[in-house]
Length: 91
Image (cartoon, rainbow, N blue to C red):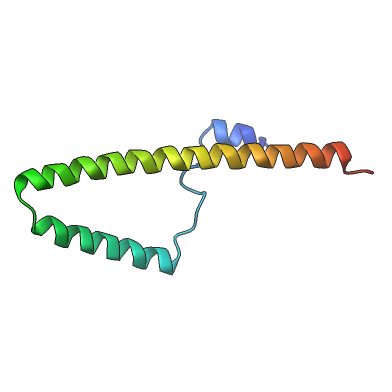
């Protein structure tokens, strides 16, 4: 049996796709965002649509960076907790 780290290495555990559950509330909010985005886009000029597209790209990149940073922080915190448990768990 492979270790968790080996499973991550071989791609059997997808950290960025399995880290959150899509709830009913999330699906509903995603639909609202998409609907409002589409409605806004229909009212824009071509130049404004290009600006909105650039905004969307930048926002997606920022969200990706934030998710990565949160993942790294949480992983490190979990490791520190595990180390502390192993170090002081038998006292």
